[in-house]
Every structure is written in structure tokens, then in C-alpha cells.
Image (cartoon, rainbow, N blue to C red; front, side, top):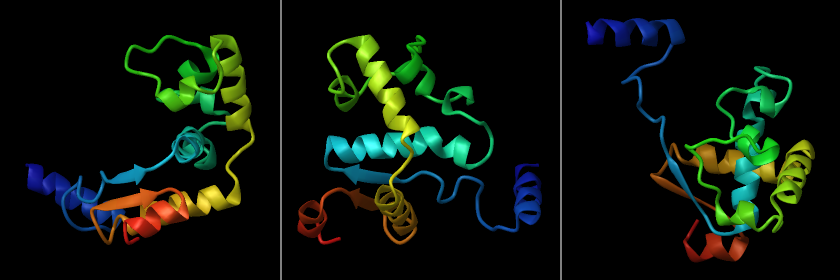
Length: 137
């Protein structure tokens, strides 16, 4: 039954392989700036995909916790997020502003390049030029 299901999904989506093949990858991020850029990219994915009008409207987004202060027991704030401001209300306000600014073209290109390059090798680096150069990427 499992094989028949996979075959049917692959035919419908015009793809091959297992259902989870190539789905999960990792990118090594060297600085808080790049981590926050990745977080903004993820928060805005459902908006770019036309699934919602605002990142807070997406059910599975961390935006609700990070910008609106809604409790989410699944989230542990990263230290980069906590460094945005010492006061929780100010941190959420600044985070919401950061997300609302959208993704600068250079960040979008860097993140997309890192995502695309994952198809060629297991790990990818996202960070400053010296960081990537030191790692041979």
C-alpha cells in the first residue's frame, strides 16, 4: 500500500523517489545577522506563497510568539532574538518592524543560493565572505 501511495503522489506531482527525499537539509549560519535574516525569510514564506496576507495569520508561524507575545510551549527564543531589546514589549515591537521591512534583495539571494546549493552537498554555509571562504565554499 505504501509503494502504491508513493507512486501515485510522484505521478501527480511529476517527481521521483521517496516522499521525504531531499526535504530536510541544514545550513551553518555564522552570525546573528544571518540567523535573523533566515528567520525573517521563514516567517515571510507563507506570505510570499500567497497563503496568507500577514505572517501572523499563518497557523504554524513563530511570528505570533515573537511579534505578538502569544505563548507557544514549542518555541525557545534564540539568543539573537533576545538581543533585539532587553524589554519584552520593545523586543516584540522591533521584531515586528524587522519582519514588516521585508527581505532585502541581497539576503533573499543569499538564502536562496544556500537552499539551492544543498542539492549538491550535505551542508551549506550562510554568513560573511571570510566565514564562507575559510570553509572552502
